[in-house]
Image (cartoon, rainbow, N blue to C red; front, side, top):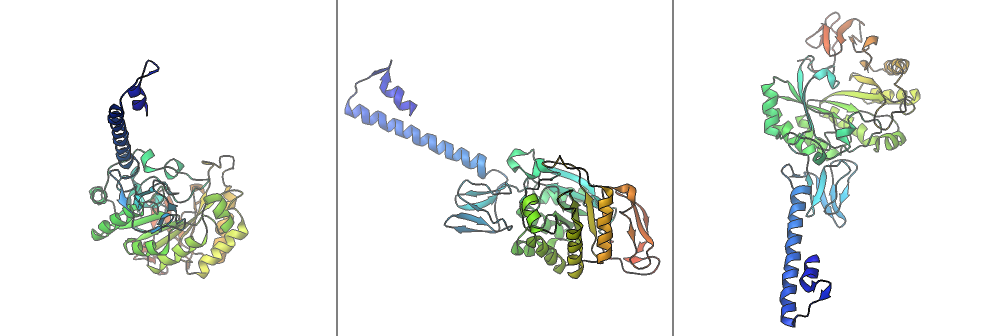
Amino acid sequence: MNCCYFTFYQSKEMKTISKREFIKKSAYCIGGVFCMKLFNDAEMGENNQLWKWSREAIFYSVTPRGVKCGICPNECTLRPGETSICHNRVNYNNKLYTIAYGDPCAVHIDPIEKKPLLHFLPQTRAFSIATAGCNFACLNCQNWDISQTSPKETRNEDLMPEKVVEECLKNNCASIAYTYAEPVSFYEYVYDTAKLAHAKNIRNVFISNGYINDEPLNKLAPYLDAANINLKSFSNAIYLKLNAGTLQPVLNTLKTLKAHKVWLEITNLIVPSWTDDFEMIRQMCEWLVANGFAEYPLHFIRFFPMYKLTQLPITPISALLRAREIAEKAGCKYVYVGNVPETGTENTFCPKCKKLLVERKGYALLTMNIVKGKCKFCGYGINGVWS
């Protein structure tokens, strides 16, 4: 309205004009305001939602309250201009768009053992990508600087699915890993890349919290070859307070991936005063065995003070070894302890003859006594994908 003020006022004194002049000048003013609004709307569309990396989401529905995302159990309902909990889905003109497509903030080549995946293509390399965003808000997040922000706030690379596959092949990587942040939150990018990779005989690896709805998971699973699912705890209350999620959808994900014959390994981070309840760990391990996961590796990981839990101590090695003992007693056949290489608890032993099959040091493999998927000594089948 400043344009109107300076049109009609001079030196703080009102200027007398005719009715015709008033209408004419008012029209100019209204036109200027309208043009300014068009400029602002165009700027908002370009900079806030529909930028270069925007794609319409696959799973959503339109409701009277806004668009409802169907990717994960959060099922965010967004009004125009609002952004999802995972920081990378927006309602633009009553359609849901992902802004995490072809714009990874992390691109690395990793040993597959780093994921961790110890029974899947050992000593191969994974082309690892991540965009910003996550559908959880874990107090202990190691990658909070990318998981708890939007792709608009990170330094990104321009890497569309075709280019990911091309770079994977060029760098002689056996797989593409969707990792670091949460791949459920950049689902469309994962899905399109995985389809292209699958057609080129590149394996796809999903490193995830497992918090995803059944329909999108069933659509993606045929293109996945392996997954490491972070089973945060076996308590719904802890999931809510520590991670801002719930337990049952993660258990459903494990069952669904197993049904699709995706190779599975499961990680459990032992956070002092949060997830170091040994009775809860026992219940978790008994559930895994009862539901057919006894021969899938279980990794207990050491916690280091991070993000919003810097006041906590590092997980005692004794707690990790106790958790391993409980898991083995429950019937889990391949139990590993991560982040404590001095204990030798990342080695693989034959469940039948108990001999050392795979000796590891860090990400290096020192000894391999698995031949064609079987123990070299007694012939027992060792569950995994070895070639």
